[in-house]
Amino acid sequence: MSGLVAGLLIARATEYYTSYEYKPTRSIAEQAVTGPATVIIGGIAVGMKSTWASLLTIIVAIIAAFSFCNGPEHFLLGLYGVAVAAVGMLATLGITLATDAYGPIADNAGGNAEMSGQPSFVRQRTDTLDSLGNTTAAIGKGFAIGSAGLTALALFAAYVQIVQQQITTQSIKFAQTSAYTAPAFPHAVYEGHGKFAIVVPGVDGKPAYMDGAMLADRAQLAGQHFDEVMSPGAVLGAAAIHPHGHSHGEGAADVTGVDAFRDSRKYMLTASVSHGDHTDELEFEVVSSREGSLADVMAFYDVTLTNPSVLGGLFVGVMLTFLFCAMTMSAVGRAAYAMMGECRRQFGKMREAFRKQGMSDAQIADPEQWPKRVEFEGVQYPDYATCVSISTAGAQREMVVPSMLAVLEIGRAHV
Image 1 (tube, rainbow, N blue to C red):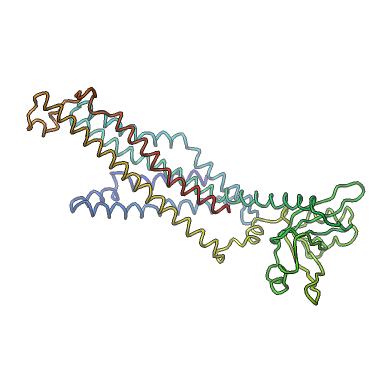
Image 2: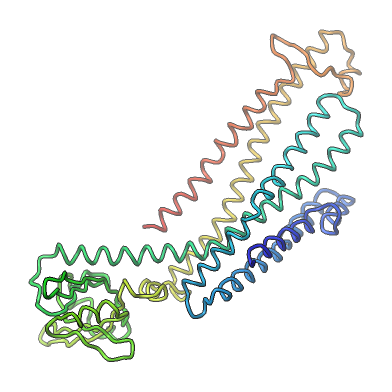
């Protein structure tokens, strides 16, 4: 319901800001009285201002769907509600695609009417249809952007869960392949970079239980030379921390100990490590990669606004939006320049053909008197195929660099 209502609100707001029947579009048209500069300024201003309605709608829809699915108490359930809200918004996709396709159909109808020599009032009627088509196309884009905004949170959570799963898988493989003497009690093996492999030996023919763990107690270990004294492959004692606060699991492993580790979200690790002329006694908590929450994973990787890398990534993402738009607009300008050059060339050939047919300069100066088709040097003009080729080839060629920009940024973020 949240997604359906949000989609309807976005459609209504889009119609208000793009339809010729309402004030925003009419105000831009009024700017044409004073010249093209004011039209550009007014159009950009109205376009930027129109984003507030869709953004607020998406925010309210996310919070509503998250709350309706009891997200404050069960975070993953709330994310599921947000994902279902996106599905609800896309439930009207058939209608949305149909209205989105209406725009170019009406636009092409107007072009056909003009090229086929229809009376001027026919073109006026198709222009009205074309205006309505622009509005329906904008509504379709609003649905697409709204659903993408709703699914962004769920996709991000799914990505974090995959990372969490990979931490567990890598830890188990590290414990299985590392050459160390395994003690007979629950223990942890340090992998490096704040990650541990948890191993609980099996008893009575039962397989060993293995898990991954993430360092959570960074502040307490800051003054204990942790990175200097703890090297990959180091073995530490491990105990499961009961949800109510006490720990158990040190010493001989039994079924109860395995169950305790399997159900525990946190582990207590202890070790005595030599550092120079003294010994450091370490005791700190780690978070299970199996049972840890999304917040635990985010805390382990320090994904907060106080992290300069995260804040820089946000700024880079915003910058890429404007840079991508600027590059695409420049690409359109270059393609349009090539198209104009071809049109001028064809007009020159057509004028030569008209002179050879005996048309006067006055007739040639009036495009209304031009024949619809003329042959010159074995080519039929206007040569629409060449113009279409320039448009399609230019669109594909000019989008290579903007597309590579997005791909390179994804690769940089991955590294």
